[in-house]
Image (tube, rainbow, N blue to C red; front, side, top):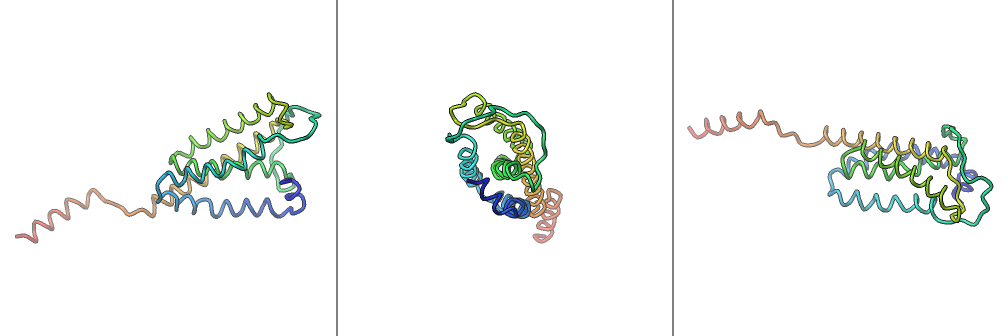
Amino acid sequence: MISTLLVAHPWFGPTVLAVLVVTGPLLGWWLLGRPPRVSWALFGVSLVPVVLLTLVPVQRELFERCAVGWALPTFGRVELLANVLLFVPPVLLAAVATRRPLLALLGGVLASACIEAVQALLPVLGRSCDTNDWLSNAIGAALGAVLAAVALVLARRHSPRTDDAQEPVDAVRAEDAVR
């Protein structure tokens, strides 16, 4: 279903990727000013498509249980690009919630590996594991972590600064005003 949409509209995947790259850091920056539970709630919502597209059983006969290959995603490889897009939001949101992009990246890469292992071990799902899917998910996780890191930098630059060196000067001025 999603592959059909992406094949019928080849501009859709690159457009979504561009929107994520532009809005991801801004959304992350905005979320950093909110309680972490907001980011965690959005993270939970972002996992719904991951589960639906990777672990929900489908009715099809598997000709190949697991495929091993290493192909980088491109705009012409619809399924690989979709796998990149799938992992950007959850990793971005987890990184913003924890304020630890590297930890979120590791979690995304491990989650993708677990998904591929479940697909390999449970043929009843009708899904096949593929190292290309894992690689594409890992690239998406890396992109999500980078976008979160940009959001963290934006938040640091635009946060109100409290200068410790300023406090003694203000105290001296206050004492001078009293005299």
